[in-house]
Length: 88
Image 1 (cartoon, rainbow, N blue to C red):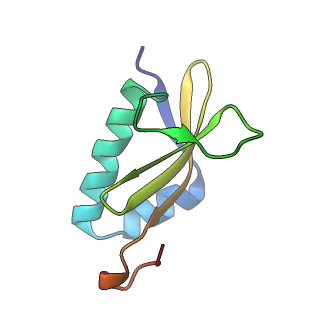
Image 2 (cartoon, helix red, strand yellow):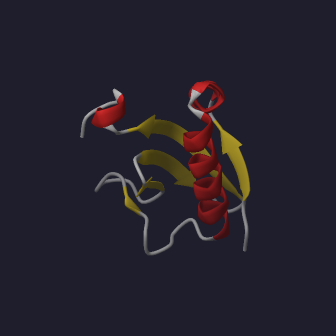
Protein backbone atom coordinates (compact mmCIF):
# COMPACT_ATOMS: atom_id res chain seq x y z
CA UNK A 1 0.00 0.00 0.00
CA UNK A 2 1.47 3.32 -1.06
CA UNK A 3 1.11 5.90 1.70
CA UNK A 4 0.61 9.63 1.28
CA UNK A 5 3.72 11.74 1.81
CA UNK A 6 4.08 14.84 3.97
CA UNK A 7 7.14 16.97 4.74
CA UNK A 8 8.07 19.16 7.68
CA UNK A 9 8.87 22.79 6.91
CA UNK A 10 12.58 22.12 7.48
CA UNK A 11 12.61 19.37 4.85
CA UNK A 12 10.72 21.50 2.32
CA UNK A 13 13.14 24.40 2.73
CA UNK A 14 16.19 22.18 2.36
CA UNK A 15 14.63 20.35 -0.61
CA UNK A 16 14.01 23.67 -2.38
CA UNK A 17 17.62 24.85 -1.93
CA UNK A 18 19.54 21.63 -2.49
CA UNK A 19 21.43 21.07 -5.76
CA UNK A 20 19.22 19.77 -8.60
CA UNK A 21 20.95 16.37 -8.86
CA UNK A 22 20.54 15.79 -5.12
CA UNK A 23 16.91 16.90 -5.28
CA UNK A 24 16.26 14.27 -7.97
CA UNK A 25 17.91 11.59 -5.78
CA UNK A 26 15.78 12.73 -2.84
CA UNK A 27 12.54 12.61 -4.83
CA UNK A 28 13.35 9.10 -6.12
CA UNK A 29 14.07 8.08 -2.54
CA UNK A 30 10.72 9.55 -1.42
CA UNK A 31 8.88 7.52 -4.07
CA UNK A 32 10.67 4.34 -3.01
CA UNK A 33 9.93 4.96 0.67
CA UNK A 34 6.27 5.80 -0.01
CA UNK A 35 5.85 2.48 -1.80
CA UNK A 36 7.54 0.45 0.98
CA UNK A 37 8.37 2.56 4.07
CA UNK A 38 9.51 -0.40 6.13
CA UNK A 39 11.61 -1.96 3.37
CA UNK A 40 14.84 -3.85 3.80
CA UNK A 41 16.99 -0.80 3.04
CA UNK A 42 15.50 1.20 5.92
CA UNK A 43 16.16 0.81 9.61
CA UNK A 44 14.80 2.11 12.89
CA UNK A 45 16.38 5.46 13.70
CA UNK A 46 16.13 4.99 17.48
CA UNK A 47 16.08 1.87 19.61
CA UNK A 48 13.20 3.13 21.77
CA UNK A 49 10.99 4.28 18.88
CA UNK A 50 9.18 1.88 16.56
CA UNK A 51 7.89 4.39 13.99
CA UNK A 52 10.85 6.66 13.15
CA UNK A 53 12.92 5.16 10.38
CA UNK A 54 16.01 6.24 8.48
CA UNK A 55 17.41 5.63 4.98
CA UNK A 56 20.68 6.59 3.31
CA UNK A 57 21.07 6.64 -0.46
CA UNK A 58 24.03 8.08 -2.33
CA UNK A 59 24.89 10.75 0.27
CA UNK A 60 21.24 11.73 0.90
CA UNK A 61 19.90 10.82 4.36
CA UNK A 62 16.29 11.05 5.54
CA UNK A 63 14.46 10.39 8.79
CA UNK A 64 10.76 9.75 8.51
CA UNK A 65 7.80 8.61 10.59
CA UNK A 66 5.49 5.87 9.35
CA UNK A 67 1.81 6.01 10.28
CA UNK A 68 -1.15 4.02 8.98
CA UNK A 69 -1.78 6.34 6.05
CA UNK A 70 1.18 8.73 5.88
CA UNK A 71 4.94 8.87 5.65
CA UNK A 72 6.09 12.13 7.26
CA UNK A 73 9.62 13.20 6.35
CA UNK A 74 11.07 14.98 9.38
CA UNK A 75 14.74 15.40 8.50
CA UNK A 76 16.79 15.60 5.31
CA UNK A 77 20.54 16.03 4.96
CA UNK A 78 23.43 15.52 2.54
CA UNK A 79 26.66 13.88 3.68
CA UNK A 80 29.39 14.45 1.11
CA UNK A 81 32.55 16.06 2.47
CA UNK A 82 34.17 16.21 -0.98
CA UNK A 83 31.51 18.74 -2.04
CA UNK A 84 31.58 20.66 1.23
CA UNK A 85 28.53 19.09 2.84
CA UNK A 86 28.41 17.48 6.31
CA UNK A 87 30.97 14.84 7.14
CA UNK A 88 29.83 11.47 8.42
